[in-house]
Image 1 (cartoon, rainbow, N blue to C red):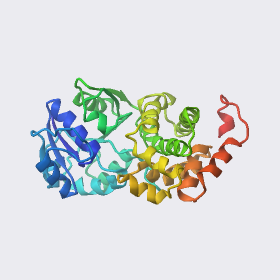
Image 2 (image 1 turned 90 degrees about the horizontal axis):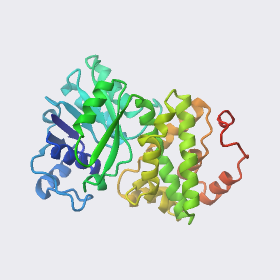
Image 3 (image 1 turned 60 degrees about the horizontal axis):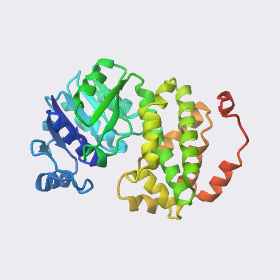
Length: 340
């Protein structure tokens, strides 16, 4: 297939390499021209040490070249740039195009997932009603994918045939893809798990151990499932790769930028400084405004997410927040109604 990757960050480059090694004709575009120049000159990405970038991959700075005549168009830009990039590509995208989004986030105010953002932007000209947007999610660190380590992902779309086309595109010896028609659940989990990873990092920064981490992951999944149910999503999705799988890898891995930012915050670094020190996009911070709006809209208790928001956006000290969590009203673990 002809596949174009929009975005030359670590995840976009790692996926471009996987697709090229699977035999596809791959093009990579970036709005940051320096990123294309670096790939062309070094055949490597500065944040993916040891990865060799295949010579067969076509690099371009021209957006029309990256969009036209493609079987799959893959969005690999940070969540805050998904809408502007969708607006840029609109004139060059054919109706019926399959678009894959790998950004994980929820847009504030509209509360759209990334696939909904893409469709909302493309539909502004009334000529893209048949575009299919597939969310590609799961426990996937670019640093491991770039080294051909075994990885499991989920291809999600209400149109199962589109999800299956993307599933087939990623068939190779190190990556296994599953399909899921609950695209809203997959994208919701993908956005919220970054906030849970911030919480896990803060916990580690405070000096807490494995007991606290396991508790955070477990109760974090319970919170995500509670909201997912209220939004009409499938509970099984939260127990799958996009839910439990992604929370585990993002909350516990040294590769996780969200965990790294949380770790610094837990150690006393102000949130803005911690984000700057990470040096890359911290999607959990970007997801907080929309998460708080969803909590208010659906009247769901999500104390871990609310606590992270209090630390990041309200300036409350992590120690004070932890004390509040530990002294909450006692509840029954299995009584879902009680947690609304």
